[in-house]
Length: 372
Image (cartoon, rainbow, N blue to C red; front, side, top):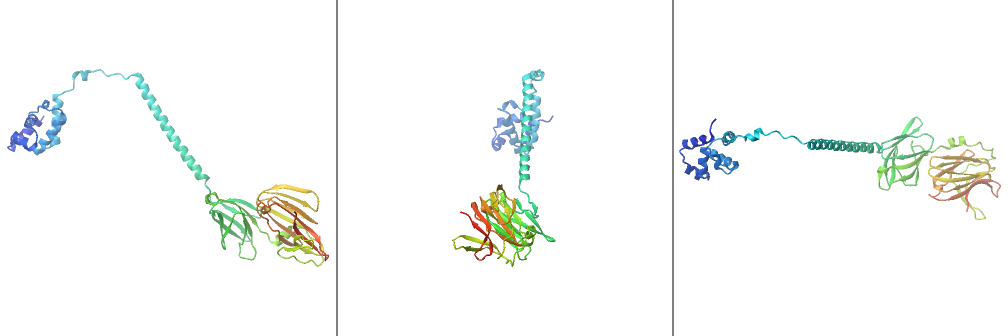
């Protein structure tokens, strides 16, 4: 095997350099340079010093430093073989407790890995459930029955109208309800009822009542009640046939307020030479305790919620009790005519009489009066 020391000496002598000069130019003591050339490994405090000096000396002589280090390690292996007692030492037996500890450690790591994977799966499942529970863009189709809906932004409401279907889109549900209609945007405020035109013809086709909405969070949606407005002809078709009045006069479109000589305030619904049966339709758009008495007979009382309706008939009149007068919309039908009764305030308790009275001139008037 080639000697790293001989290689160093031959390179130095080939260049005509003595050890003193080499020592001055490499800053390595001449005795160490001589020890490298003679491969006196024991002259160095440790391997680190020897390898460091060897690399510097090889570079100084324009030799391959890494190759010389490899040659040195080969020489060292031959000079310092492994101790015989180390080679012949029996293999130590691994204690049982160490094996058990290793098995337990592996088991703990496996259980921990399983729990981490399971926890991540549960997080993924929860995330998927949250995504699945998020409001979807729904499409509702309205018929003739009043509807109560919880709507979100971008939901659509389809309303059949003749041979076509009109679409309404929920544009915003933050603070106020904004609805895109075929004729522009319609805004509805809380506890407000708005009638909407769908075909551009005289008269409105539906009414929407805003029951609940968040002031700031549009993602919470809104509770609305939507009712199809029936024409007078449709409503008159379900009303009882009136008695033949003599020279009956058609009522005005709006209620006429008047005060009697006794100071009683009332609003005239119908004016006719003779009284005739009338029908009252009530559509509920919120919770309300409603009580009524027909022709001074038995009292009927019930608790109604949004979307429910009541239709009652009378020959002489009704007495009505309402715990929340703004919660219902009422219409009176008679003699082929339909008149809307004014809605009260939200939360207002109201008692009214709707009845026929004979006036001083001999004519009959169907009037509505508040009862103290």
